[in-house]
Length: 369
Image 1 (cartoon, rainbow, N blue to C red):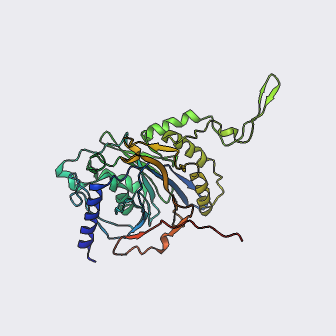
Image 2: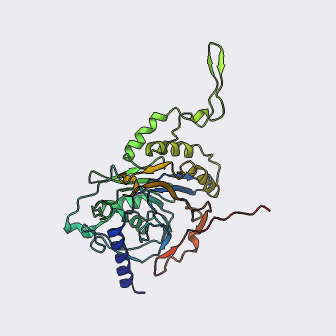
Image 3: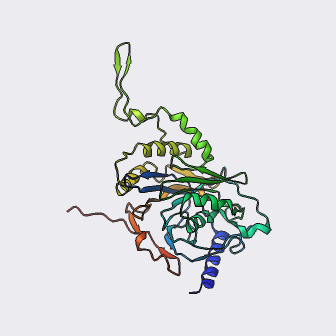
C-alpha cells in the first residue's frame, strides 16, 4: 500500500469521524509510580457517558499523518511523518490516540478539560503549522522521545480551534499528561488561547480546574499521612481511632476531579519504594480500583460537558497500566475484569499500516477445581 493511499485513507476516516461523532471528551485519573530498578509505571482510567468503542492501535514509524487545519479538514494543517512507533487506545474507530506509549517509553494521555481548554487563534496563513486538539497526543508520541523534547516541540507548533460539528461545533476540550523513561512529567494545557507548559512533580493528573490550581489545592491536605495517628489524650483520657486508616482520615472519596487528584496523590506517594517496576504494575491496578466508577454512580444529562453531548450513565470504559521499562501496555475493559497484555517489544515498528486490536473479549475465569 502506498503512502499516498494511506494518507488519503487516514484523512477520510478522520474527516468522517469529526463530522458525525463527539470524540475526546473524557474524565479520567492518571498517575506515575517509580520502580526501584529505574523504571516507571503509568496508570489511568477512561470515563465517558457515551460508548467510545476503543481499540488498541499500533502506529508504525515513517507513517504519513494529515494534520487537521483551521478549516477542520485533514491535510490543511501540519502534516507529519511519524518518527517513533506508538501503541495505545483510540476512540470511535479514529486513527487518533487518547492514550499511549511510544518505543522510547514516553507515555501519557488526553484528559477532558471542558471548563478551561481554549486553543490558539491560528490564522489561515499559519494553518500548516497547526494541528487539532484531538491530535495532540499522537503528535507528541510519534515525534518525541523525552519530556524536554516535547516542551520544545510544542513551542514550535500551534493547536488550532478546529471543530467537531457533532461536538457542539467546538474543539475537543482536552489537556495532555506525559511521562518519559527518566520519570520526568509534564502537563500541557491551552488556557485563554495560550500554551501552558507545567512540570508535574506529583505525576498525577485529572480534569478541571487548571493544573496550577490542582497543585495549589494540595496544601489544604497537608495534614494527611499514611502513618497511623496516636490516640488523642484529653485530661488524661485516651481516645483511640476506631480502626486503622486514621492517617488518611479526610481523604476525599468522591468522583469530583479535585478530589480524585488528591486521592491519587496520597495513594501513589504512600507506595513503598522497594518495589520493582513489574511489582508496581500490580500496585497500579490496586490504586486504579479507587477510581473505577460503578454503573449508576454518575448519571449525566446531555447538557453535561463530561457526557460527550449524550445523556447516560458514566462508567470507567477502560483502564490502562503501562510499564515503560519492560515495555508492557496493559488494558482492562469495562465489559470484563480480564487484564490484556500488549508487549511492545514484539511490535513491528516499520510496518506499513496502522494495526488494530479488538479488546472486547468475553469474561474469563481461572478455574480452581
